[in-house]
Length: 267
Image 1 (cartoon, rainbow, N blue to C red):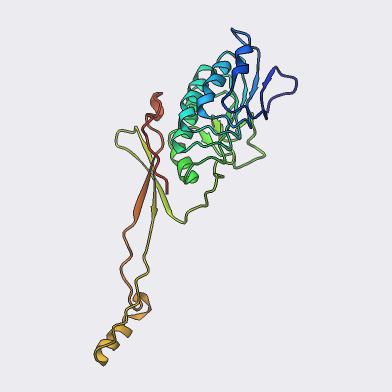
Image 2: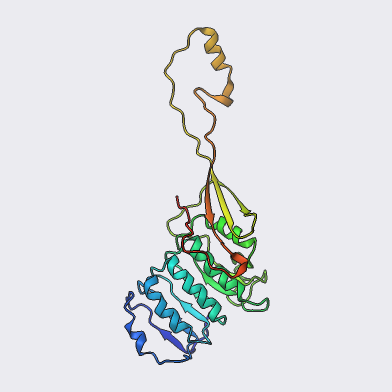
């Protein structure tokens, strides 16, 4: 985390919303701040642009705190641009916002692609957002990106990754209001390698209504009883599995941002 007594711009806990007129009073040109904190302000993506413009004027910026706001995927593109414009950033705190898998992926991709192999890993907090099936999303990202969920809390810290990954995603599996689905999850790449899809198959087997039709003759009754426990009375074939798709990383390794019309299909 950030050392004490560093130059800090602190607007946290002020319930500012998107009324950021106070930023006009900040001096023009480059700024000395190493930490910028706008956490807990009910800030939305509309007001985020002004914060990002200030951050881009901080060449030594290392920590950006935006947790507990109302920022969604619209703001993700600006944050991804910030990661590329100010590669010195080492921590971005975005928990308790409204990002889906699409917006989160845009930020993760940008964070990863600007870091060198010997760089301090990005400490990227994205828990308690609106990311469906986060475990499947992470495994899809892991196929092409150097990311770590910090499973080993002793060996993986904000400054060092045991697995020598470029981006730490601590607590990524903890998302707002979502419980794990008992499902069969698998990942597949498109043939062009441009989109990684997290496919979550959920078997929805309907319970058939109990029939009231009486047996017509002892031979027919014996036939039903002889079907055994495997089939059961009134059993039907399971309904076909339904797939849910998540377009997670368009243009992942080519430095392109996901298009704004990418839709994540929620339950």
